[in-house]
Length: 473
Image (cartoon, rainbow, N blue to C red; front, side, top):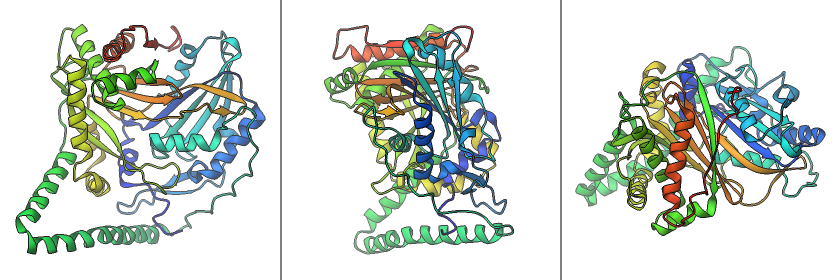
């Protein structure tokens, strides 16, 4: 392996360095509700197969401690699958509301950074013989779409499953004692070569254009520079007058609504499902502020933009994070979807998007606290992850629902949608210093989605809210 193959990306390095501040932890939690308890032997076998397919699930991070080179993934010589797999039973039964307290604790707890950065806990004892799995992974292992790819490595597409040959163990990757300096130098040379390889063709094209069309060439330079400035600009104040405080305490909640109903709402407004999702979130944030006697004309969001291409390795992060303002003073759902569509489309087409890794590298020169100060002034995060459109099974149990609880990374709240067959499973992960009344917040977001769904349906009972069981969260 070359020195840079198993290194963190610059974007991941940014989040890794900031974890010196626990408010900025990048822990992803997902809850899969199952129709029955998974077979333990099959579950262990399935998870072991998954760690072979995705090498970083058997590896830990080693910081070279030299220069600005990011940590490197190396094989964990003490890898013990049983340490990562846990099994518990609920004492009093229940449904999703009884599992959410476990998800909440998982979202707040730090990883043991001397081991691979993931855990999976089977939760037995739910009502009607059902069960759940609480999966916890560090964001450096994967993004949302990568997480779905990883899931596909461990699930079956029929209940009985098909025993497949185990993938071979991944090629060994280790760092020899005393090799840190050499390894860091290799990475710097490789990175410089990669940047040069990308830049030279562009510079050649620019040089040719500057001769044939100097005005257009100048516009390109100015436009790209402006785009980079917009991407990297600091954020020093929250736009919300309400959600301003930050802490290490989290609370979670879940929303359910029909996938087709959200699609229909978007289509009725000549918009997409993602436009309808963001409009529901924004209307909900508007209601939450109004219920506290205040308003915000717009809120600053961080939205992941996928850069994943066909042929990319399974898992890993292939995203860039765009930070921009979205309106919360537009109360007509159709008009709001149109506004959202225009804003999001413009950011997806920003010239700086392909340069996100270089921008992250420049920001990594700053002290971690400076970067953290910028992120703690983001109002909310929102993400839409397409899940499985067909039934999937885990060790003989069907996955009925799949809820994502993505990290706040310094923002007041993260609201993430994952589609599963014909349902939208929405996970809310809120900082309780910013959102001290999560039941009011979840109700407000649900009302926002009800207004969006009403664009295409008159049924007001399509959205349900699940909060953690009282006394446990």
